[in-house]
Length: 533
Image 1 (spheres, one colour):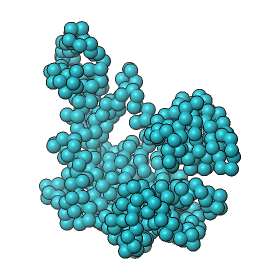
Image 2 (cartoon, rainbow, N blue to C red; image 1 turned 180 degrees about the vertical axis):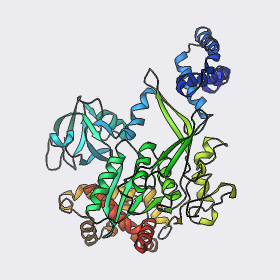
Image 3 (cartoon, rainbow, N blue to C red; image 1 turned 90 degrees about the horizontal axis):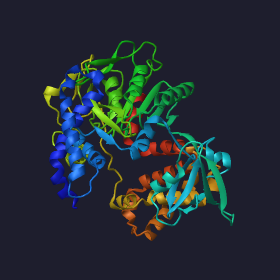
Image 4 (tube, rainbow, N blue to C red; image 1 turned 30 degrees about the vertical axis):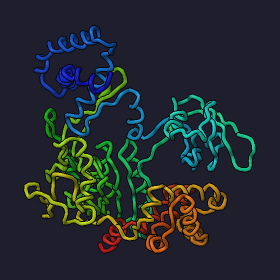
């Protein structure tokens, strides 16, 4: 039967299910509600009877379980953009980034011509222990050929992952060896890091980039800060761009380190939750450090809590572009079948009292299309395009004006940099050719490149190899016609990205970010501002 027809026939049932699921949630969160939820129990029998009747008497075979699985996501869509039902099959992959580890064989890889190439093995991980090397190609996994068969990379990942302690056999193709080499690997827990990189940009200015807030984030940040402090750190650039959030607790813990005791960091409040304040404790290890926080339209949720706490307490300077605007707090509860529900239970408010959740009254599609609307309205390039209502104006203790109603507005706006952007650059980016060439080059020259240990070494070496002209020839073979004037205009961006991606393939992010910083106008602005203070 056509799914749309079936939906129209069953809509009344789903509506009833929506009502009862809301009731069920009320029971599930009984510690947050009063006993009046018991009055609606008779409706449970009505819904159960309706579902049983449909399952027993409907013209076609139908599963009550399937009806429920289809209906719950529809129910949540009507609530807010961030309440989410997670089926059993997806729960592990959804939770892994926040848990700080996954179970696998411990490699970083990329796909090249439908073949998985090992970029790096994770130190002391299962693959390194058995002797797998960077540059190896995995062709077979447990008797299944995974190379040259157009298999999606996520399907290969599923084959490599599995419960801790289980075995997986892979066959490796290694350069200069004719036969495939078999390896039996025992899967183990593999750490997922949320601090992408930490290094000293100048003698007294450090840089830490956090990609998400997981269970390990605070410990990673604290260790990175300690290491940079030994290298002379007096000022810090904290990069939260494209950080979509995660656990609020660990964002609060980091904010705590920059503030003196008893300062409000954030508070939450919801229909069933009274106001709960989160305040700083005395003795933070970063209270004497000047800090600049980088944000953009990809900065959301817990990242906005951290940025808002430092901005509202006049503790740090916020640089970049307006953040995403997610001010809703989710709580995850698991059902007995292993599925889970992430329900929005509260809004969070920055210390000045602003809720920075952007509106979602016009539906999920428009909510997520907001970033495209910002682009079309010129907001990413012009600060004056951003309009805030005076009714959402707030003041920090030092009198600085901040706004609620849709994201964190930076203290210093830095537009999206279009300098050097040409049609040629857009074409090679859209086709993924910069990344593809860098991977090819790294693979073919790994022995020489592995002798390089510092970002500057890569830049010096690759400049001498005239990488740009070789890339242009490669792109031509891939169908992008050289436009010499445009190539000259985009040369700095092209060269920098090529150097950075090649370095990343060899020495990971400690090679990538220090090279990319030279064309990062937001980061350069932060360096300038901190150097003046």
